[in-house]
Length: 403
Image 1 (cartoon, rainbow, N blue to C red):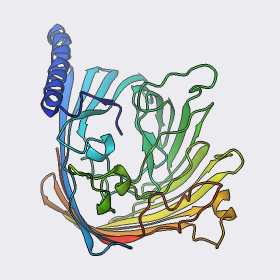
Image 2: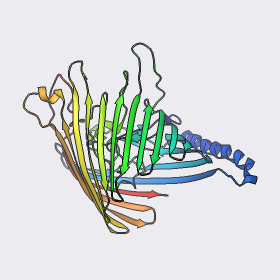
Image 3: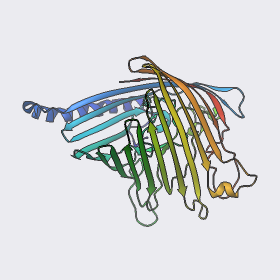
Image 4: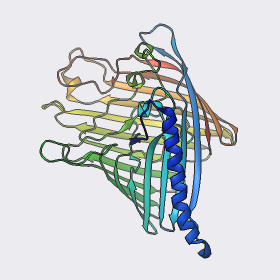
């Protein structure tokens, strides 16, 4: 989820130099108040985290001879978490995410996101910057090199998350938690008069711990005015389907990595989920609905989606995991198409995770996805067939270090 590119992608050396200077300035800025508070014993704290990841695939795509096999672009991240004072903290993430940021060539970091936290009371925090939010509450989401919270490789084709410019209110009281986000798109997008960009995104979530082994959550997202919600969807980086879209100077067009469902994002989206954790099991269930009115002036777009995921710890360093997801096109476009096309997208993924050493995780998984049918309709684009690629299946691997 990119917000700002530190420099031109064509100059990798200057990008790294800029990032280094930025980090140095951050250290210098926090060193001054630290010296001023030495006598009181109140020093600002800075914690750094490093995430590194490499993945590979061997995927068979319907309509292509042989398998699409090879290594994906490596991803890396350096994060700084700063406790400026008792009630003021922040997080800065510098990430290299080639498909996310469009930097297919060279290795250049970008500011993935940053947040500023102000704790106004024991259970209430105001967050500004580019707050990360979505409608999934308990499952891990793979984003760039940050992948160890997700037991499988990549995300569900119906997962959505964002980090737009905005503010977020976060509350926690006993077993109840909530957050409310008001944001706009990833860049600097100001509200304008007349026919321009008016409105904001509004995303609200609530969770409740029913017991030690059961948690439930619900979320609702919508856009006001003329805004559409700008979500990062699905994998984006873990599966490459179409070798014929390879660029002459290397790398692949983003479209070849488009394996997610085209959920409508101009109206509203709701999702409910639950996590059940009777040791050694970890089970996730979720379902949702997305709707957008009059996408072409007259017809509505809509999609229903849901999934089931499970993980079982065999030992402290070895686990099994699986996930099934279905997305169903509920819009006018498929209703008006001829030939009764299939409007379902399904994906099943099963795999293992092995902690080779401390902080080093290897995942291996098998994946199969069936897209809905392509169809010609004056009323819109198929929700369950977002890219000109057929169904696929294959094997994925992922090695990650996180500290």
